[in-house]
Image (cartoon, rainbow, N blue to C red):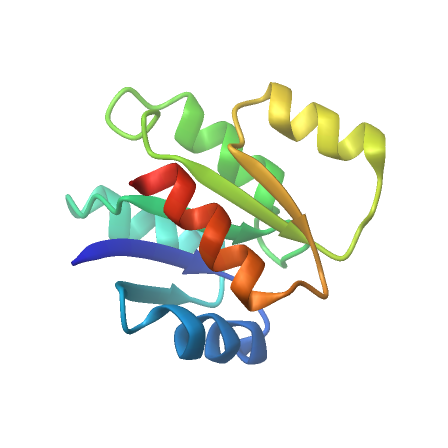
Amino acid sequence: MKKILLLDDKETIAKIVSIYLSSEFEIIYFDNAIKGIQWLLEGNLPDLIITDLRMPEMRGDEFLYYVKNNQLLKSIPVIILSSEDSTSERIKLLQDGAEDYIIKPFNPIELKIRIKKIVS
């Protein structure tokens, strides 16, 4: 079963994602990016990372930069979730290595389809 690392400071998002994806993916959830990095540095390599953009302690764009500039992690696809519908921010994050940028609120079925296209 493929693993997805989910980083979001709102537990509700984690519950929604888990409900729709846990039958096909193992979901590993942390409420902030720093905990996610610690988990990754312990040698855990997910097949995909989903991160919120606006989080305390470390933002999703900072996390994306960290992952894409780490030799061991840079090949892991990253999807950004954000309530910010900014074309310039979306373009910047896609240029910085994000595989996709999905606006909240999102349709969980659409998210599942996008994930399957990336990890299959």
